[in-house]
Image (cartoon, rainbow, N blue to C red; front, top):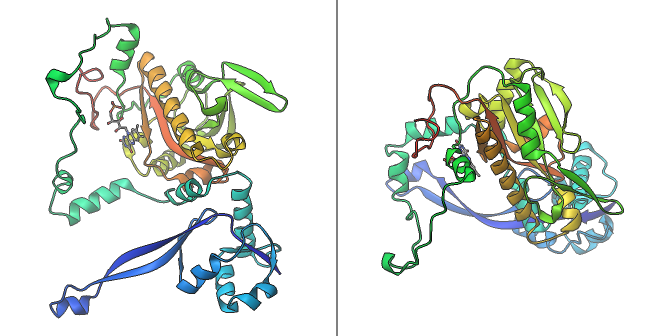
Amino acid sequence: MQVRRCAMVLVEPRESVDFDFAELAAGETGVRERLQWVALAAHCDDEIPLDAAEVAVLGALSPGHWQAFEALSQRHPRAVLDALLAKGLLIAQEPADAMSRQCAQADAAVRAVHWRGLPAVMHRHTRWRDVDTEAAERLFAETSEQSFLERLGPAPPVVNARAAAERRLPLDRPSPSSLDALLERRVTCRNYVTAPLARDVFSAMLYRAFGARAVSDYAPGVQLLKKSVPSAGGLHATEAYLLVQRVEGIPPGLYHYHPVDHALELLGELDREAALALAGRFVATQAYYAAAPVQIALVARFERNFWKYRNHAKAYRAVILDAGHLSQALYLAATELDLGAFITAAINEVEIEWAFGLEPMAEGPLCVCGFGVRAQAKVTVEFDPAHQAWP
Ligand SMILES: Cc1cc2nc3c(=O)[nH]c(=O)nc-3n(C[C@H](O)[C@H](O)[C@H](O)COP(=O)(O)O)c2cc1C
């Protein structure tokens, strides 16, 4: 059997704290601190506990060259090699069972996309699955005697002033423009009407935020897009995947937006209840965002950005910035049409990947946005100190 180490793995010396209740009852603190090695691999969702012998052997195995398992077992304890194989950190060239096959495929998917090690591990291990933020808030309220703000204490100041007020150089305010008016009216919306959204408004929103205004044949085999937002390398590697609940003439379901054709690609129809339930799972149970008629997962196609920015220290940061630009374009398009919009980073990435059929290390959701007509009554709080949305 030929084997090699997985492509990317970081090993963390982690301290965890346990309580020994018997010790606690005997009047001691009962606190037991435990240090353990934990492997965080870019091809595996689970964190993998390791012992010191496994860490030592892991550090002596090549991720590049296939080597005979028998030859390796002359140099390293066989039981340790077996354990690394069973934990999915040692990859078999011809896997014999389903679990090893799955590991080998996931490792090959990481290798194919030119990730840099640190962001690859960070991306894989900061994805949520089945997180319910509302339940977490309820649990905090039930188990804590303090309010959330009491626990946090005062925030760092609103501005990190670097000079006394009298030493600041005053700047002129611009005379109010139509852009100022638009920017001032932009308020994150957490209250949506239940009526369906008009189809022409929906189409205009998608075009302005995500549509391609030109396609450029930059070089043989390399096309770039022109959009309303900047994008690292002009690659526009972030695409819009939609969960439509209520738009006139568009069946509820999952769609991919084709930015060049300005068209929707149906990935699966849903009934109304299923669409609402899935919307809730996407946004980690934030009911006010699940109630929006349209949700959009901004999905970074790492494979496209990293095609140019291979193993690059800034590439992951660049795709996150791209998502921020798209979100602001969506907000401004919504504001101009008197709609409300939102963005949230509190999302269950893994469930979004399943719904849209995404290979996590090739294409990953970074946030969920949405839009719709603002409700007449404010049930959920919005941050509108200038009274632009709620006079
Ligand atoms: C990256 C990012 C993540 C956010 N995540 C959430 C979220 O999880 N839940 C939420 O209700 N709002 C979320 N928001 C919206 C902010 O709460 C909102 O922008 C902020 O309160 C300021 O209000 P404004 O957008 O109306 O100016 C997020 C905004 C950004 C930019």
